[in-house]
Image 1 (cartoon, rainbow, N blue to C red):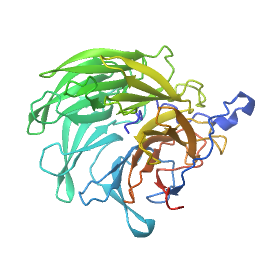
Image 2: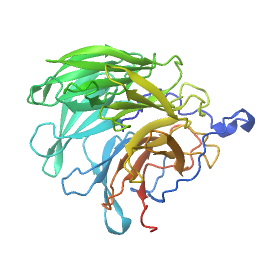
Image 3: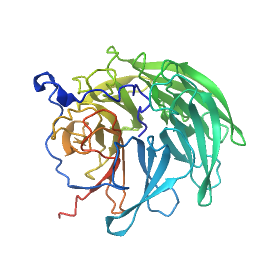
Image 4: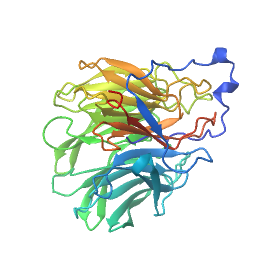
Length: 420
């Protein structure tokens, strides 16, 4: 999942929460241990400095039917592919293409030539910056390497890019989240051929985190959703009216302007045939002390049709920053996996990775998979080791102390069944 790593990272020297008297600190979110066993692994080189992994996904980049982990490393200004070998060993393969603070990578065959390219949302600066440092970058697969193309520059910090045929002409267009800082936009880029795109503004507002594409109204074309988190905390949709025309719709406005929107994904959570939204809130870098807040958690926007969404809070995990959906226990329903950036890290037992087990009726039981590493901002699910069970990968962004229990890219292999 895409993450708001373009947010207000102006506070790299804030005091650790542990410096507060514990009587003033939120005790944090702690849950019963997961009933499913997981084996934690840490791909990559030993960690020497606090990592800043902005996005991680599980994807078969080279088409060999063996998935890799693809991570955006905003500290090292690069993409890294991790490949799993025998005996649970991992090798690290940096993608050697110049880029400044990548926020999100979208893997798609943009040119229709049969291999997978990578669209990279470039922040340009991971810390507050309202200048035009963002870019839409295309890494075009060319044999065993990638050719670098800039599709759009002269823009502010980019947090997300998604690809789909938005105007119905048979090629792939782009939706772009220009987070910026005090200024930002939601754009769609019309594909006019030969790696050229014409940009169209859909919304002028700073702080757009994610722009997932889905047929939200069931009419057969792709609509755009947007999670806006800076001046206002809002969920927008842009209804595709055909021919490159969109109708703007405000789906939800949070009354709490400090709620801390952190992410959004699409999923048919209740398996009723339409597309719902899962929204995470828990980014509180605007506070002097970044402890969890009582209004943090995950919200299910149930699609009731005709652009009506019913909001259900399904988790109160402090500092929730990203979500993924998968049937972890293979019982036929959709579970939710959450990660936390801002739990009470002065304690060693607070949750960083949580499984919300679905009883089939969308009643969720939280179970704690991990309390380390801390400061997790991105999570993905998929079958990493080819055993048919969904595994978990997550990434840590460590800019706020305490700088212990560090982790860059971490995986949890699902060992359910190994015990039988």
